[in-house]
Image (cartoon, rainbow, N blue to C red; front, side):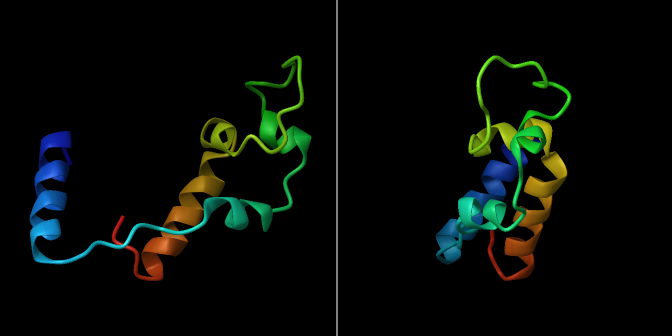
Length: 80
């Protein structure tokens, strides 16, 4: 779906009802009990400082975990 189509779809839905955004990402990430190496992945393997706890980084190093969490929220009824 193009950006314009996605925007129009969301705008149309917002005119009809309140949309539910997915929930607490940090809590869901904590359930995976990730370690420093999980946060680093191959891409940041030799990075000069600790990365554990940098949840934003997981979009690059552990995209499947992030995708799965968002899918769980969608399955639970979230709209976005």
